[in-house]
Length: 351
Image (cartoon, rainbow, N blue to C red; front, side, top):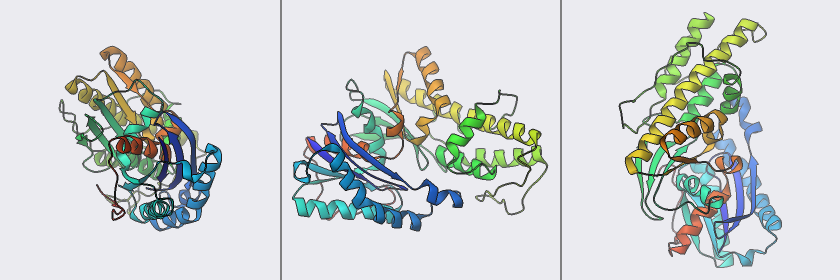
């Protein structure tokens, strides 16, 4: 089964063509990082405009790299949500137009389910049921994936996602955007030296998350260490603190804070991920989403998993970020079950 996948949920415009959810024929991604980094985060209106500019090109390129014509696809998979509504509408509109012009069915895909099904593209031994954790800029959610059609939420964030916390802390520290890779790099250059930050909701087998308090704790600790504060850093607003990045003590303290912050996030994610896997008696734990590209996270999951006899399954790095191949993978499984959507479906910022 040949599937065209389309992904426009946030700030990556992507189109991919897969075969039987086991072979990626093409996976084209146009990133908008250079556009949004000057704002310290994604600007929804700019994102949707850029999708309009890029969508035709990425689809054309996907077919060229796959070496097939449009008439060869069996189905179109497109992200319907959750995500930025303006961005989603671009992909959904194009998918509907192609469906009508090519007379091909459409599968409207939940973006989070797409992340969960990315691993099938690389792991032929992955079987139902399994426990999956999506850790990204917009979501931190644990799922019990019982079958193609039975996917149950076991726990989710009550406020901020882990990836958002990385970005907001990086913004506070004046490190740039996106924050995940920058904080990971600085944290890796510092030994753990006593900066202890809070881990929320750590009552045993509580599978929900909360990272809002951790962000505030980083703000307070940074103000304490650097001896400076901004009166506009009120709850929910994180502006860069002013300090001299050329000062060796400042650089050392930035690394200390990044290490303490990252340790707090990783401990929560690893602990709760394996709590969920043990609760369901799973021998594999799928960890996916943008934050799953963090090397320290992968190492921590591997060490704990080996001790528990539970294998952590990670998509390759290109499949951790938002991409259309994962949407095509999910659509393949839906199409096999005969689950298609009529063209009356719409995009939804929340699902």
